[in-house]
Image 1: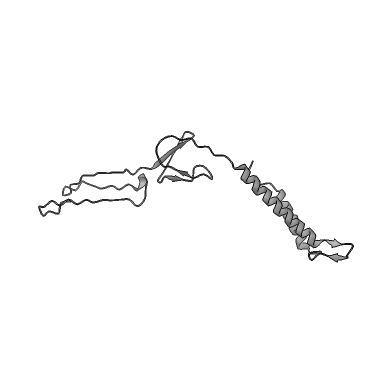
Image 2: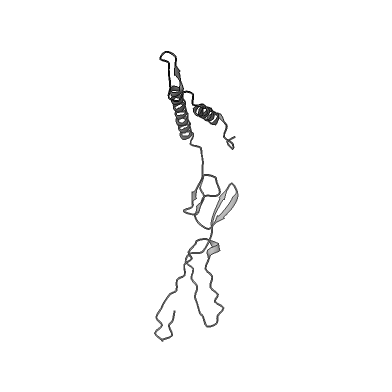
Length: 151
């Protein structure tokens, strides 16, 4: 930028957009005859593009989490890549086993504490409490019910 003093001290104006992507590109109208500018754009304002199964998707940023459910894509360079998504069945199995173990332990505790011992003629602390019978029934129904959307 020439300050008009004749010494022609070089100054530069740098404009940077706050957000990425083509929709956030900075534009300058240079039609003003009193304004002479040389525009140099070091990095273009382009949307990230990714093609998956023949469909091209454009996003303003390089982190994309809305194309494949449960998967976040972090785009780091141009080029081709193969992506394989598999289920972690071992982890799911471990969680199911832990849930069944917890269920069995809860039912065991309820049954132990609601039983009546014929020999000692002593009732468990939960004996006759209908709420725990209903709880046992609800837990069993919940465990045995199917989960929608899985098949």
